[in-house]
Image (spheres, rainbow, N blue to C red):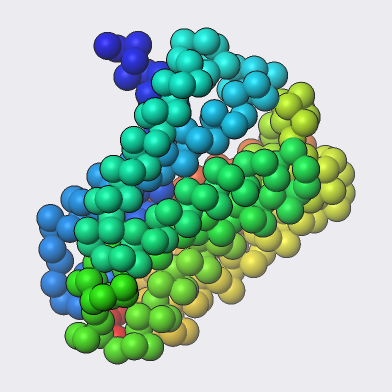
Length: 301
């Protein structure tokens, strides 16, 4: 049983899945706070449903890449390439999680369920095959990677036909808030993933993945990491500009953006794995910290 749990955790990429669920959960609480009413049962449904949907997408990803994972040190011990789990078993688990997770989320409202299905399809069946073909995969993958805040935000609203009932909140708020949350997470992924791609470049090349902007660890790719890091500074002002983020959030997010830019600049100068890791570790801290602070420094419209 312990071995199965360990393999299941690797199949769903537990740490990544929990990060996604955290992002969606925070967005749910922001949406609920905007309405002035947190329905904790719905928050629990979102958390469980979001876990299964994300786990399903990651499971399909590992099924598609099972032969490629054998070629990389960082993934060779996953259950499929190691032979501890068959493709059929992984497929059954992934389909079951996808159906269960989507069924739970669609109970909240149709839009939430629709976004969850879209995220599975885009991540597993569009982004995953593109990773071997073109660096544009990072741009495509940034879309499903930024959907959790949308899924979580709209999950907080009551169902109304095929949409959500936002009678208690202005239409502008319902459009602006999730869009800004999406944009922040969308832009965050570029320094995050390109820094990872730089550090893991040799391993990725063994599997035929070319995720750096130029496919190489060169000056241009380093500049892309730097520019994407600098963009996190103006992105940090968006909630304040649109009137739902306080000054405390803004100060922390801008400081985080400056730290991104500093390490990104150092990476342009050094072009080393060590400098790329500093950008990567900054990204690990930035997103959950700023999301949590925004929840407590959120100003409803």
